[in-house]
Length: 299
Image 1 (spheres, one colour):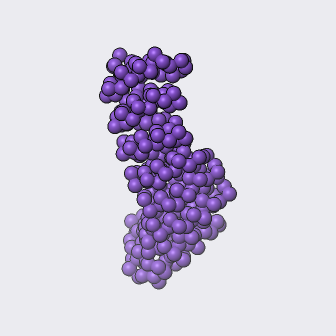
Image 2 (cartoon, helix red, strand yellow):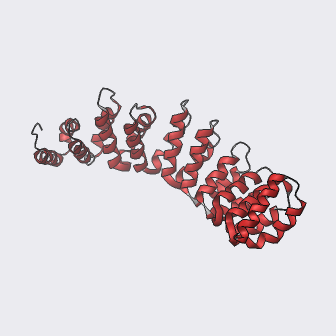
Image 3 (cartoon, one colour):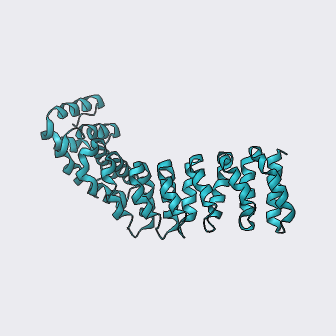
């Protein structure tokens, strides 16, 4: 393995691969090669060695005396094995949460995602970690597991830290329409409404019916209207509900802003806007209505 010619070293690693598990110690040694390409190739071959390679790779991954680059390729090798390396999930979770190197953290997370839904329960303990940044990163990664992670993320949205909540909201939003029922229910919960609405906004037009329904809830309507405003023209199916909402003083300002963001497609709301403009005393609301009328008229 000391041959400096890269092609020759790769051939030697390939030959080791044909030897089966007996070659695992030599392949682990190749992980320490100074060339990144050789390290990754050795990791690739190790990932084909089956379950016998898993504990060896775990030991390398958790050894803080190993260089970060070596720990990193060990994480990659476990990830390449996918669900076959699921026994390494606890180790990968610990590394994701506590390794001092961000690249190693990232590749441990990527390996967990490659292992599929079996890795999701392990994140529940990570979401209880004292370190806010660890909890925030865990929430972010959970979004990559798709709808299977919704129950865990639903609980995590109740985290006391606003930044963790925000990461959870984006994770749920990135999962997509399958998260809408849970988010619609969370709009009714004090303390998480804002981030539930944020997640629905991330999902986009498919969340509009849920946001429209929330306009009827005095506690949730502000956040729902704000999300509809941020959706802009994608919220055009909400035009009738927003027009109706103009009748309520408490929500009139936000309804006008949402109609303004939709633009000329909301021209059917012009008569209602003109009517409430003359009866509105609040300066900011009057201004919002005036700007909405300009937008809807295309002027």
